[in-house]
Image 1 (cartoon, each protein chain N blue to C red):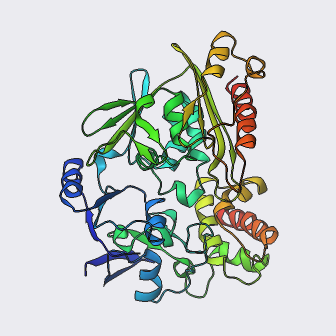
Image 2: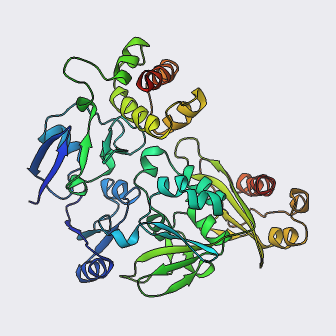
Image 3: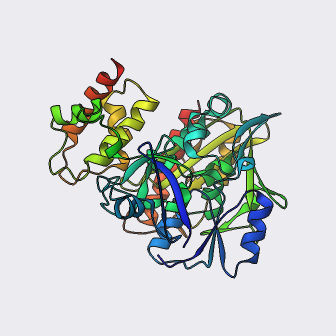
Length: 155
Length: 264
């Protein structure tokens, strides 16, 4: 089996994988980073969004071997010890979740939005979330949380 | 997903040789269509040759009166390119509305046109702008590149390296997206250039096609009024659970008028 090495949440990570192993399987099953979820497994729902070299990607639609040498950040890589990232704190403050299944992907997508647009409008946030589905339909508070998170990050 | 051998090519020549020497080799660009296809076991390649590490396939540059975009340039890079936004804003707009942000961060121009999904956005831009597809073997005119549903003029082992888009006088792309997938139910790209007006339709038929009655009318008078009496026949158009052929035919007219208005 080929081996793959990458940086995950700032730490070197490597393992032997079949070429067909998906990035999300490597993260969850090899590295036990189960914060990244698999929802639809058909690249539509966005529960599996992580950052690869700074860009949001659906980790169920990328092979682990394609991330060779990449810098990967998952939801586990955001908080500093016990201090939540401002976007995570905003999701908690604004109750931007119901069941929480989509939340890791929502937070990672939100951070990619803020990278492109430091002060997104409600409309821009809603458009950006077209690749993230909340099965509880809790979008209203998710959008509020992202707006507040972006504002907190700008401070 | 069935198992396969994975290769990361260092350059185009190596990619061509790797895919040529495999018993059933497949190229992977961004993988936004191929990986879901593999996951559904709809394809069983022996080897996957990844173009993701080939620097020569990436980038956007102005070359005379054209914008040349490398095949492995991602949709987000086209959408945000100052060069593309200045020269062909309609193309940047098209790229900005493909799929969703995570798809735009991986999906590529070369992958999209080589796959030639009947509902993909880029084929409409390539045909309406009268672009030239550049491969590792030759140059192919847009009108000769797209052959049919998921079918192109590419030969086995032939790799798209770039697409050269002549800069039009004005252009616009309007699509009626499927609300779930964001693929075009119907998308219309209208471009007015020195040598005339071209109208390319995606989503409606088995492959991108030109609406020549609209082109003739718009060449005389570039206004939405000029095409209001042009009838798109539903014969041969796609019909599925999302839209009947008649509805798609109707949308061709609506989206074309909106595109002409947007082009100004």
